[in-house]
Amino acid sequence: MSADSDAPRRATVRTEHADADVIAASVRPDNTESMRTRVDGDAVVTTIERDDTGGLRATTDDYVVNVTVAEEVVQLADRHKTPNP
Image (cartoon, rainbow, N blue to C red; front, top):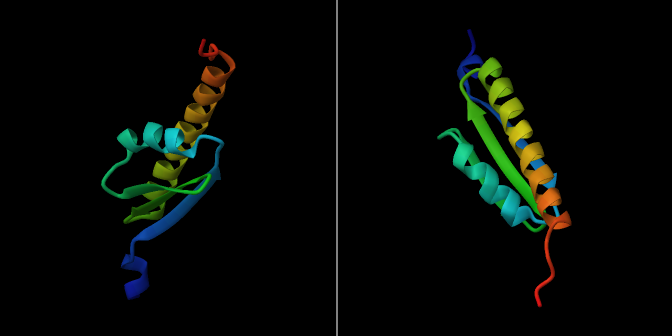
């Protein structure tokens, strides 16, 4: 086996949102030690690093579901905001 086969696998997911800070704050509590989330302008950028491809795939899939749900909740909340008097 080559040394490369032992190297960690890494994926970076970048998604753009009107409320990137809110989305990032929503997904961070579910991050594991192998995940880092930051805001870059209107984007949430999360880097995931795992020891194997299967683990990377599973973690990335879970993260994408979490981002999708967070975005849907933010959109729903925005539709139901009441104007300040």
